[in-house]
Image 1 (cartoon, rainbow, N blue to C red):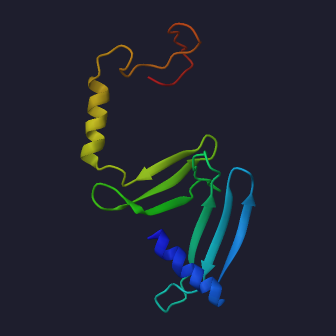
Image 2: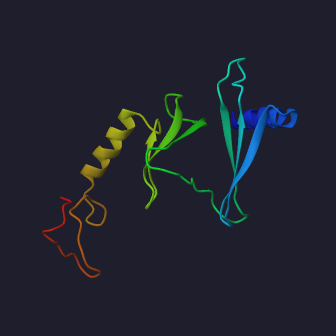
Image 3: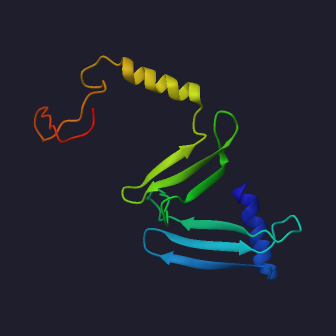
Length: 143
């Protein structure tokens, strides 16, 4: 778990085997990255743990560096017991592809429910434009 990694890395940094660097010192998100040259298995695999400090009263938000970056969340398990991960699809707006969040049966049930919706305010329909009323624009591609 992340807590076990934190304790192990703290011990390695204290003993001189690892190191920590302070990153972005913005008001919204302080980040510290701790690394160890030893994978814990006697090999030379590099371990890394990112620590984020979030001001009281604020909500944590992942801070991706590039499209394609993957955030592994081994402490969050999906329905089949697999760890959840997020892949960055866009930086602005922040869009993530979430892996192992739900299984194929659950995703099919969500799609079926959306397609069977009959309420005019909730059913799937073509996007409209404008602030008032339901105006269709032939140049919009959603159908």
